[in-house]
Image 1 (cartoon, rainbow, N blue to C red):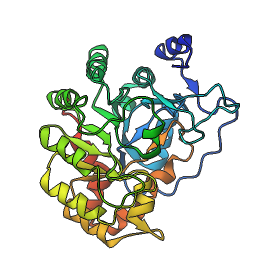
Image 2 (image 1 turned 180 degrees about the vertical axis):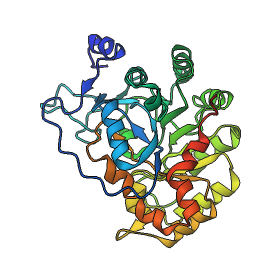
Image 3 (image 1 turned 45 degrees about the vertical axis):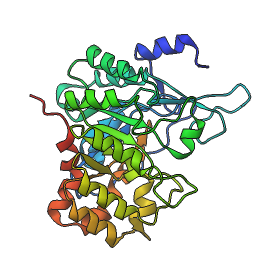
Length: 340
């Protein structure tokens, strides 16, 4: 890794680098009136440089957006600042430099959560994510985090597997949802009642068929006791599958252990058109009212958090009231481990 060892020590001790360290933070975007109480099923405390606005900024943003609970994870990758580049990249797509795996991200999350009071702490549901998902040693890190922070973790993920450009930019072998390296993690998750949030694209950016579908369904079939949250409904940028809703419907009918996260680009690019939800998606969610959930997918910075949650109002308004409540808040909570 190009990161200096001293920085790893500082990170492990909780010395997070603030987001936008060189420039003042942008002004917060005003929130709309709160219409639905929500749970955020997908939030990264840190960005691709392991920087963050901080846990207190997340809490303030949640209050403004009407979010009662959030999944919170680190970021399992760091964007390398290549010696050949004069400008430091802030996002994985900023230049052609590679990304590398970074396990200390889970320690950063644990240290930030320790800053919260008891009642505020209950609103956060931390997931372990700092693993190279193609490495058969990865399960050891998950076990270590559970041992170091007993009772803290409530899930695993976002596990990165097929992820368009990010896959090609990342050092090492590309992981698959059904990789042998992930089997012991799925088993450990089931044994501890921990849901697994996984990014596994249905296809590549060049194909219109779900060529990677079986990787996800193989994992679902082999691990029926593991609860899977399928991030972004198997979609990323520039992936276009004409049979997308039919594929999701078939998988939901066949595998009762999978829930669908509709955060990020899937909402704007596939679920809605001209700002309105498509009937095929409304029908799909109504057919499986207990299986869909919303998320912000914010990455380290939270000044524009409210719009990322409240954009779902147009969909929730189109659903039956009881389905809207489940999709906005309850379905995510139903996947979490039962705590005393």
